[in-house]
Length: 129
Image (tube, rainbow, N blue to C red; front, top):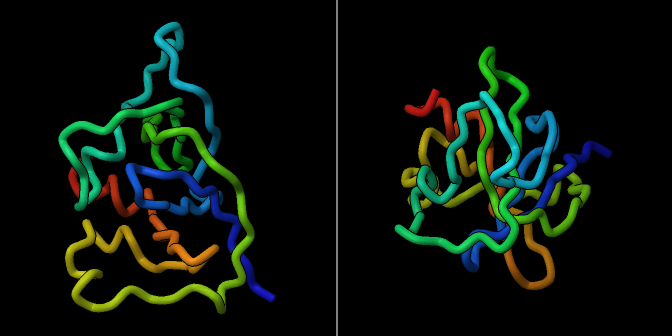
């Protein structure tokens, strides 16, 4: 059975699932950490962002596919889950049209809520890199 490893995090009340195959490494954001990577907070580039979001424990998710180091800052990961591909639901057309560059591409139900599946590479390629 085909599966995808997803790291679940939350932004406000929205659960997001990040495909682990796109993540090179994860570390806690701290002021002492010196990095030459370009960093961006995820709430600033998602279509349903708010001007201010509080991060309890921000983490940097370094992405695999760029020549120059690039990371997105997301709140603390909640858990890792393995999702069977057949359980992933496509987004309704109207919702899909509001997503930046097709970055939210599906959803999976878990415990009576939905996890939106996020393609972080597509999300940041639009105008950030």
